[in-house]
Length: 221
Image (cartoon, rainbow, N blue to C red; front, side):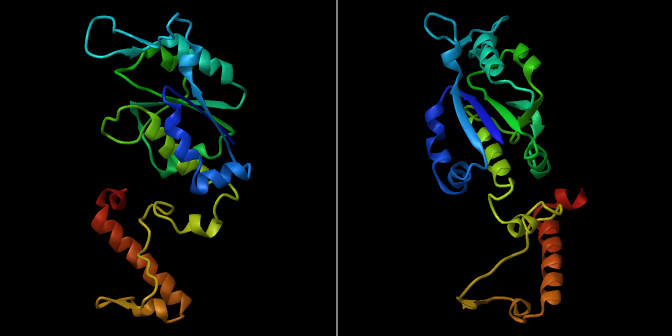
């Protein structure tokens, strides 16, 4: 998979791409991630990428030309272009699984007051990471990349993926490690029984109980 990210703040991605699972996935050639400063595509004498909104209003609006020229330079037959915007569909694990099957993603990070509406004409999808406002699309793009890259074959073990939250529409079951008792709190006996069927049943029941209590919205779905 190849991921191209358009941003005005490329340095923000330095730590994200150079640590942990994402770093290893890149080193092992499971994914290629490229960061593009779309200011480099501006045809303005001063590399301007935004301007005041027609009709008046607060803030500055990102202009069509730099972003659209940058996207066009990256497009190929496999490209899937995503705008990160509060207007988008709220992101979830189901979407992550779907996007992980794409060969080439182009993520556009917004900033300032938003995008010129005409930029949407070159996009295939619009994604929001939640009903709140952030300074820009950089953090959402990292969230999306992280959730997708870890799903790629060979990045993490298949067993780990199969037991995670949301995989079966439920939250993950509670987990424990040594010591057996800590400050009076003991690991459930069933997990120490060695009976794999009982453990499996306990974990399923724990998932249901946890989801009902903590995420009733998921349980209703």
